[in-house]
Image 1 (cartoon, rainbow, N blue to C red):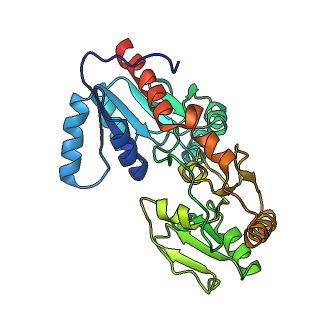
Image 2: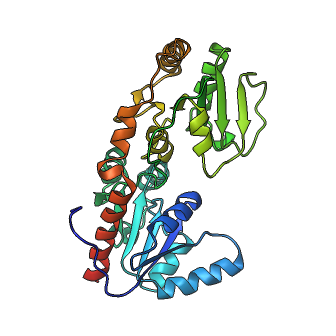
Length: 315
């Protein structure tokens, strides 16, 4: 598959919709070589008019984030008889869809007339478990560093929680438990858009949402992602590429699989001990893995373009 060339005689226009951060980064990364990817969010009357015009002209619709019901965007796409439409499932979208499937609220057109993709093997299993025909097409981060970075002198643990409203999904309770148990470890929590938290541990520094975490990866020793449900995490891919130790609730090459706060506390203690003794090394194994095969940006871009070209050509 990777040996084939993407051949496009005319410029292909792809309208990207769905999750904002992923859509913006993905569109910028994928554009070029005869392809034009443009992301349109659901915000503002002027944007909606521009999106409607783009929807009429585009060759293909690509939505990041799955669903089994219509919504305004898919209703418009169906009204304009857009085909093909790709829906890339990437994480907690499967949880929301499972509720609709269980209550009988899914739309047959969404299930049967859209090309469903899954970004990881476990999300693929979840989508197929809902009775939806699906293909496994990886969607890792385009922002993978070319080389690992040297470890900083200070030991720090980098964690991410976007909102207290989804604190349980992102394991905020586990993070607070670990921070209270390890008062000598500095935790850096990025992404929190609301709050404040009641009496947080003093060894947690809070940072607002940051689009590019490069400097945070360089300053961190450990990246811990205690999610209770996840897709193919861009944060994990980026952290591995920087050569960082990664603790994740999913088994993944280059990462340490931890399922509970107690397991994470044990791992963090051991890593801090090695770091203090100057025996902790850059995670070269994880960096090598994520910069190879399906997870290397140039490779997964080529893979996605090949699949999109096949879909457009067949229509």
